[in-house]
Length: 397
Image 1 (cartoon, rainbow, N blue to C red):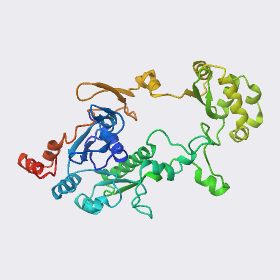
Image 2 (tube, rainbow, N blue to C red):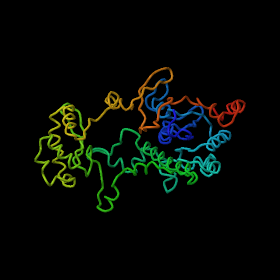
Image 3 (cartoon, rainbow, N blue to C red):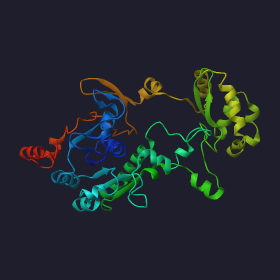
Image 4 (spheres, one colour):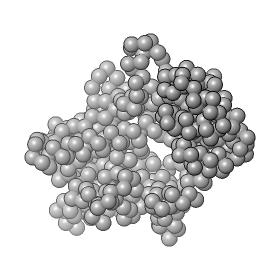
């Protein structure tokens, strides 16, 4: 597979979610990704959530297309190997607490001196600077500090969380974007490598729309509104007669009129005070009530059929069971069969985004611990005697 990032070498020094997900995206689009793991233990993600024959299914997804090398970074020989890897890399991705790599002799000053073209993605809870830099931080903390938790859930309930580690994944995406911008600068001869400083809370905060100016200018504090989209009307989650829920987004002026015709409320659709979003927001409760009356008398399939025919955006709320049997997911190769060790085939998410000429792909699932140690060390110029000695000393596995 020749992806758009073929020829790019990435060294992943991270664990669990944020750095590994960023590295996974590089690997899916052709980069040579070398994941450094602790001998005997490996990435803790190997034991997270549902296990198949002792290994996490999440691991097989998160680490697909990566090469695993087990290096003891607490040993001098192990640290020397890590420096040799960085010297030949285009990108190093890490998500340790700030200062950890510096204590190991693997900080930016050391690695950039060895490789001036190196891009170093540093993902942490609060960033590499500022009064909170030394605090421990996970994605959940970033979601709380970034404003997402305060706006998630029902109005009468405590703040809720999204059901996935969204804070970590948002940081991963920001890390990849920053790394690609830095690589473009290096590869076009515009400058040397640089640090991409990504914090979990800032990655969440970056998606919080007009939260800050609304507060600063108007004193408005956006809070929890359940399934509704505050300030945009009508856009909410509505019940069906068969116990399902449908999301309807009728919030453009033309779509709103079509929606009102479908639900047989032309009086609302032709009301000039509801012709624009600001007018609809003031009477949002009336609109939601009218839509709910209509949906609650019909099955989910009838609702979707009627709204689709009228070109009104709507969707059932998918469970994973809905996802894996949906024909559109299948048509766009978003459900891919993957063979695990032992010959078991399991469905995995496909590749996004879709590139027309150089699409990404899956070459292999997450590797066993240290599966590629010999291969990677040989690529650094070490011979069999060197590798045997490193194993005897415990520097590698």
